[in-house]
Image (cartoon, rainbow over all chains, first blue to last red; front, side, top):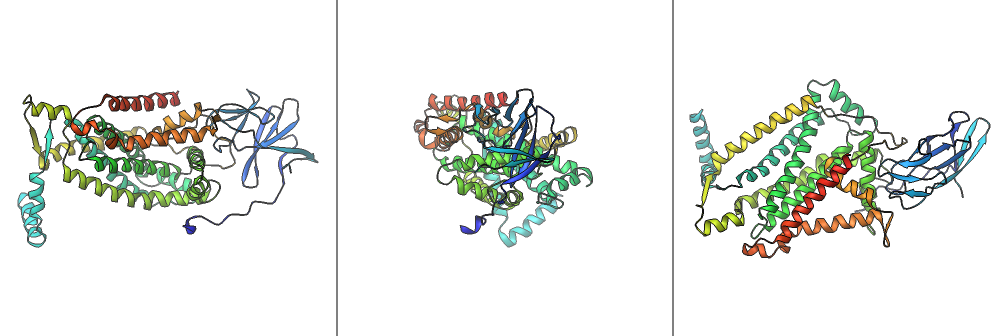
Length: 115
Length: 361
């Protein structure tokens, strides 16, 4: 039985990642970025500020996206909605999205996993 | 031709007693009554399964089960290999038709009460075969490594992962790791072309053996009419009468498959990207739509259970009842039809149709 379960793969130790370049995202838009082995979501709000979340839906693991028409985060798989604080507000998701810190370093938008 | 057939049969008979097979086939009969149309569905499903095996073998000549190559190899089959588009489209259409006829077969057996004594094990083996066919559908869906399949697999395996106790183990077993990756593709390919065909062949042999041993069921209403002398007991030889009728159906199915594949070639979609958002309008194959739609309606929490686990528990309990129907519907053993079980069947069909239609809106 042990043979059929693969050995665990070590997670990337990196706690931060350059998610985008400054000016890459328009106001009221979002972008999926790679954070270790999982996707993250960087959102530039209408006022130009940034927020970043895990892009993994807490319902069944689909990858969420930013809906500029709703100004909310949406999961296409089962119609789950999160607000821009990452809180699950509608549909089946049981928990909020994980939130990351966002900093501007020179030309880079850097996303850091909170401790 | 007839002489060649007779000489071949004699040759085989001298060595293996093959004449007894012909003799056996000549004595095998099929009941004739107003429900006879439903008797052809099992053979039709078997025919489509054979089409699957043949076209699957042809696809194996070019398909490469790695995340870098899978999508491109299917694209190559569809665009470069001569008649590749036809083989792949027939494989996909035939898979869907096969599951459709298997569902029809199951419901016809259910409503004609053919699961009653002594055919309980025929029902059980048939239901297990249907589960295997659904497994074929689920594992085969991922193989082209396109976006829809990627997210459908994510959702499907995550549902398995939500089962308390064994869920985490099951998720890693199915995915070959924590995430849907190339390891998942390799595993699903193995399930699709080795594990499931092996299990299907074994179960099919048992199922056919049971059908052979017990013969085809006559519905209780026809049995009563025969017993009361309202209708005569009629039958036809399986070979060649019933088999030839079967073959007319298979020929029509082959024509339908060719037509569907030519007019509506199976789409390939876009290549899976683990770092892209799930696209709008995402949905699984039609035979999983009712479950998919149910999950949309379930709230995050139902009492103390997570919504998706409660849903899974509900479907598991419903499947268990369905599988055990021959043992739960005791009155039918005495030829008495229970309205409860007929109603249950109508409810199940209604639920599947309505929820699937809602998912397609």
